[in-house]
Length: 132
Image (cartoon, rainbow, N blue to C red; front, side, top):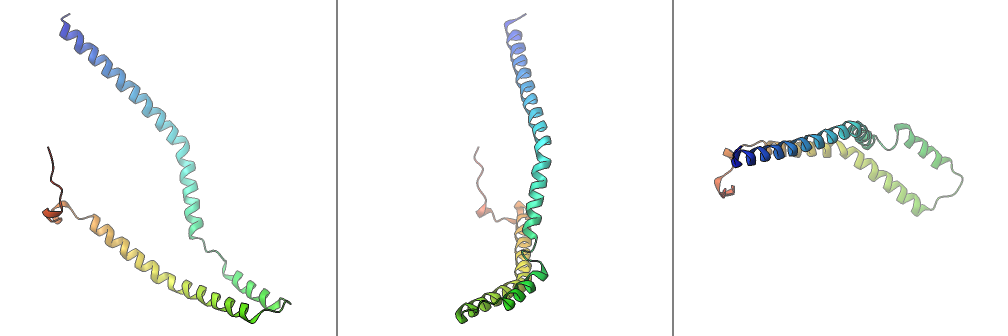
């Protein structure tokens, strides 16, 4: 064999060995992902559902109010005023939540719309010059 052919054959062999080792690493990663990904997805889904769950059930606030009324300890007028103000703020925030969510969804849709614009829509002054 000519020396050139030997070199190319050795280069091909080393390239094949490198590709085989890369393939083996990919297979290990895929196997690892297949074992861990379902658990990660279920944990993520649980945390998302927990985040969307209301903190108090609808009947719990009525139970708390009835407990406050039935408590035998006399309340300080200043504390009662603060509690009343806090309850008003909480109910105000709860009633404003749908409006805030709607505005957030509108903003997200506008951002996605901007992201969907193609390169032709961007003015050339804002494009990077390609080097090379």
